[in-house]
Image (spheres, rainbow, N blue to C red):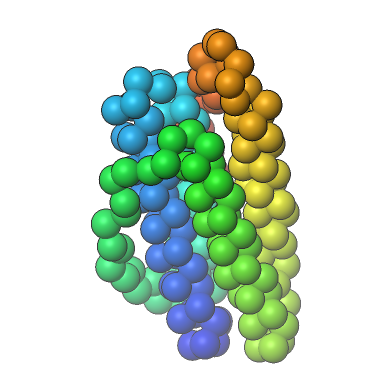
Length: 172
């Protein structure tokens, strides 16, 4: 059985992952509106990934005998500051989520909850990847700044990111 303190913290993280998903879905809609379908697809895949993170936490909490208590999610912004500004906001957001995950690890240690600490290691590794992906795209956007066709090429490249299929989502 998971402690009430750990249960509350995991419920808060489920909410944080859902907030992230909603933010990335809003960014996807923004990029669609800007006629950047590759950027939109990348953000849509990011939305799906964040939803899968929330689901992993949801399933884990239930497996440990905890109770999932979903919380409200505020509306995300509808406007962003172009591709570079949007990815800078993405990186800032991912750094915030990394801090939340690291705080969960610290709490698991404090609670002497080795199972949760081990479970959370996947999220720690995932956050390293999330930050690197955002940083890489920021650097690419800076490199193509002012280069004719550069944004078009990057849009095309980001559009290659696969979206989750229902079968793949069920396998997680």
